[in-house]
Image (cartoon, rainbow, N blue to C red; front, side):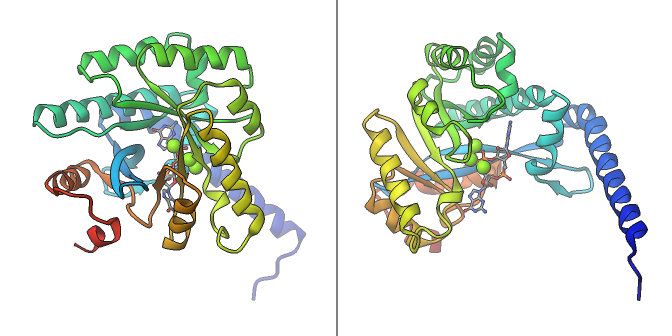
Length: 292
Ligand code: C2E
Ligand code: MG
Ligand code: MG
Ligand code: MG
């Protein structure tokens, strides 16, 4: 048996920190080549509209696919790129990949459903960001209404004048705006008070006990009631069970994003899905569709 005295714990601590730093360094130093080699892949997770049981749009989620095939989750590399301020580069790459893909769908005569793209708050420090995004969109001749920008509420950036100006610029440029992870941040009410957003994504943390926890049910119900009055579309994130779906249906949530219906999937798989759905003439309950 191994004795773990104070010293061993200390050494263990040191080693795990060193390992973490090493990991971060290697993530950091390989980003440029990874971008060049196109190792970042965009996955798409469909969102289902509850009133029709149909896939109406999707979210673009980045993955890092190493040459050896291993896939790294954004939870592991995005914090590193945020720390060293390189995340805006990756965000722009993902956005351009989405535009390229939408153009491909349009060129093949497919119905291209809207896609939402995550943007780090760090992007907002660059005053040219809206213009740059609009230019990329125009380069691929993507019609307005097909692209939505998602950003989170954080304490990092709470200058409401600047933020609401950015939202206005995004609107003028033809993008919809959505607040991601709503309820997880520190400024939820201020966010809906100050920003003219189109979509509110209610964070997954509200839903694990939604069928049993009265407080969670009431919170979600009231949030939805409240923002509906502002004309905001509501999306529930991280939905994994049909009980959760039925609850959300009962409180008039507009859309569901979660494993219960679809996981994030590679481009080709999403294209296949769109093709299948397009060729269905009438609305078919999602559950039924999933079994086929
Ligand atoms: P997010 O924007 O809130 O995206 C939703 C996350 O929840 C995704 O994790 C998605 O795969 C996951 N998810 C969806 N449905 C379920 C479910 O039913 N159960 C569970 N357990 N999880 C579910 P993912 O893809 O790992 O992304 C994590 C986060 O990384 C995203 O959270 C987003 O904040 C960030 N991210 C992803 N792509 C980008 C990007 O291109 N740029 C930036 N800045 N951030 C990104
Ligand atoms: Mg998101
Ligand atoms: Mg989210
Ligand atoms: Mg999240």
